[in-house]
Image (cartoon, rainbow, N blue to C red):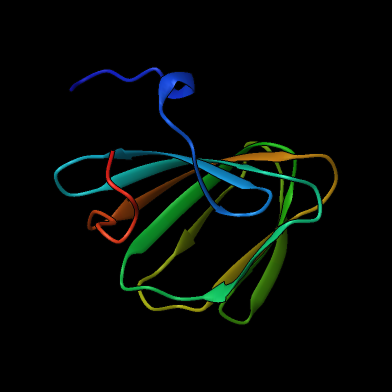
Amino acid sequence: MFFFDVKNIEPKEPAEGVEMRIIHGNNMTMVFFSIAEGVGVPEHSHSHEQMGTVLKGSLEMRIGPEKKIVNPGQAYHIPSDVLHSGKCLEGSAEVLEVFTPRRDDLARD
């Protein structure tokens, strides 16, 4: 497949208040997240390099020793194996993240 309608991708719910729609490429994965107010992703790390941008709402992100509020139009980079976490602040958030290599540990479409 070369084109995708994100709203038609079957959502996965890895945790209460977190919905993700996943697109796998050969060497990367793109994930559209919807995160409810007050919901957080616990601190974790993985071997995948990750970049993201907030499309709506705001997140409090911790990447390594740094913590910052990330608002729409702002982006972040998480190197491989760096501890990170995030929490949606007010309202809900929509976030787009890209991982490389492909996240085979996430449910395949």
